[in-house]
Length: 371
Length: 150
Image (cartoon, rainbow over all chains, first blue to last red; front, side, top):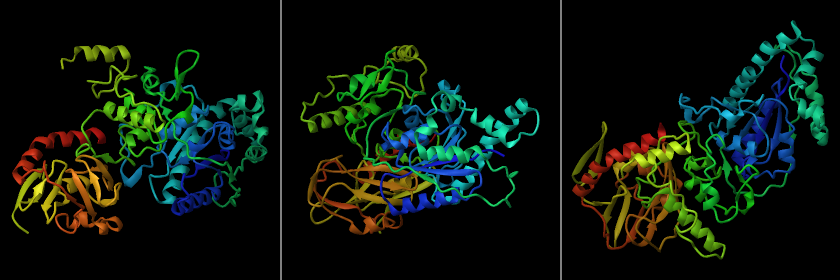
């Protein structure tokens, strides 16, 4: 059948014993599955771009599943920022037994050329390990079935032998294996590749004794980080974040596309730029407000209603809040507050809540509103 | 308990005792020896539903400004910052709620009280003014909730 699929578990930031136990239970459950193997990394958001954890994730070829204490959208774009791309695989598991909403967002269009899918599990969605196991099994089934049926049969016209299967599956990511021979760079991963190379062909039968493989545990000293993560499926490159942030976090690449250039310049706890973003494209995964932390629009799972406005949060637009937050950080940094005199977006005011496609549309729209 | 007045939140009847004042941010305010004791009104509790967790960001005996953020609340349905309804000195929090906030749901007008503030009680509303306020803000409240859910 299918090769082993990697289930990555990104640990929580805190050493909360409850979370740790839950994580270990989940890992143990995954290990017992014949067609899965587990990799444990520290909290995804805190991983350094060139650290062992990210390196390990970069070396995963093909489809994988990752569970983290993050909104899937946040986790997806953190991986993207680190060059780990794949189609966004949404889990059906949402919190509090709420049903999945039909209004889920379309997958990011610019990524459709990515061959593999990375499935995201939000570990906050349920406290029950079995829920995750069931969902992981479902994903594994979903992820492997079409792969074999549609393409493999065309290719070899018949029943694949293990070696053929191996070649086929390993050929899936030619760049990774042939181009630069990366898997060898981490000895621990070489071992996995070796195991991965001989998928147990059990015909999916349960009686075959499951071969339990110890999980790979990436030990990386992580510090808690705080930086913005851009959702490029929403970002229109309006560069208002670049204008607004006075700490040099943002920059542009050679073709003037926005990027988070100096993430660690970001001021801990400050989400001001995300409030300024007209498209709500800037995620601070650790912020307490779900909309800022990357909750998907339209999904009720894990998302709680924010009643602050009704309960007397000071009136004022997101922009006012952003300006205040920025001033506070400037002063903490020993600089002068600038209020609304610097880098304040012009379009932020009067904007409507409908999603907008083009900058032009937006401006036209605003011009036509008589306020 | 004294008389109550009612506001219909959709099909839900929210009751408000007439023996006290109310604040625009949906707390009741009962005059005490010095200042007021505050708690959530039925309107607030209905929006929150089961309260799971409550946290205060200021210490007792701290000066607070009206609308200053003084804490956080999380419930089965919602989360919110908590804001001081008046200016003054926050003298005491209801300690019992920190370990078990369920009194907010079962006994909101008595044992579920939140804190006391010594102050003039300047912008507090009478029961009728509060009901008027609810009338005019119910639309906005519904929009706020629906806007986030759908």
